[in-house]
Image (cartoon, rainbow, N blue to C red; front, top):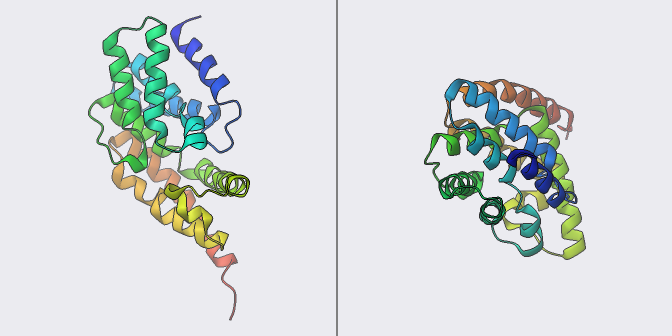
Length: 213
């Protein structure tokens, strides 16, 4: 089994019980988006595939302990790839991509591969799948709050008593700000099309929930 497939199998096992939307389907969509963007923008395929596969593997640790899953994911990638015999330069490049991928981290991507991973991860928060992921995540975080009594401060809008208010707040704070934070022309083209659908959906939702007073 080659390194990519070994990594995929490992990540699948780690994320088997992931309760929100940082699961293997998200991982593999990001991987596919990385490959789509790479076709036009270039970049090292091995670095991109490994970084995409590992980028959220630390989310379970974040759920359990708090902290930053991007940092956890980089550390997990380092341990796995070192054991697998990968060379130091490859490992360091993959770790750098993972550390800077998170929207809320504010870290600037330093390489083409890191920029592509950022773009791919952000694009998966857009379009039909973006709407689906946001609603599933909100539900999962509400369940976790009920079970633990703790609030995820990074997702404070999720915990609004009025679910619609929280959803509108999320939409304005993340998806509709993504375009301005993309790195590549290819990603901006994909995002532009996905945002059209999100605007249509949000306009329809607002119309259907605008009650006569």
